[in-house]
Image 1: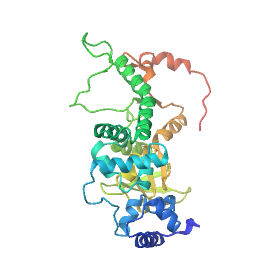
Image 2 (image 1 turned 135 degrees about the horizontal axis):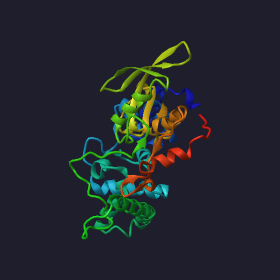
Image 3 (image 1 turned 30 degrees about the vertical axis):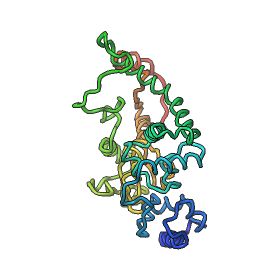
Image 4 (image 1 turned 60 degrees about the vertical axis):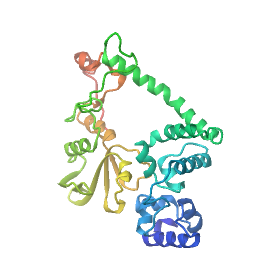
Length: 328
């Protein structure tokens, strides 16, 4: 039934719900009262916030500063309702506010739980919100082994340091130097991309092999216009947007209906209504077709700060000599 729903029908449904409730409806209320699901809103508008803008509506809190107490009670209420810590998308759907006030205070969504826990404990609310704080503590315990593993790897890769150095601190991060991604080879970009520009470069290196002929790169949205081969004799114009992570498309508040293809390094937006080209998955397959293997180095490949295969490249090459290779 929802397949044929139009943007006009959704905006009319939102306005009708707002008139009944006397306020902006939550996404759950919209689904209950108008039968319009989160999926169809995301397919046509990208986010619920964008759909509200089309109706000249704003969620409560828009345009004014939301107090920390209100943010905590709202976020903790969503967590209690779900019986788990909410994802950014779940919070956007169920909250009275957008994610913007929390993101402005804590920088990233992953820092929100620990920051709100600290706030609640400072206010003496640990008893009233014990169940929610327990969820946050449980997540911290699950993540702790990963943090220890990372610190151990940093210590190993850094090599011996000063005698009075903290053994778990890892190498000193220099503030005046850039940060690079993991090493990968063989490819024009030696290190995996850590931003959108790295994705643009890699796409340019493989565009023709993927069936794209780039016409234009621009600073405004969408980033790229290209001709795409649809058969041996015909091609079609497509609009392409580049993101380091596919979910950044939502963060940048782009319009879904003005883009055809989303090119990214990592695809972490399962509900994305666009075609997604995930380069981290495609590059190894392209290289295998040429009889090469793309290797993205992991922590276990490093000893003393150097990749093992760079130390023993000759042995690695000899090991595969004479074996048949398959293509995908």
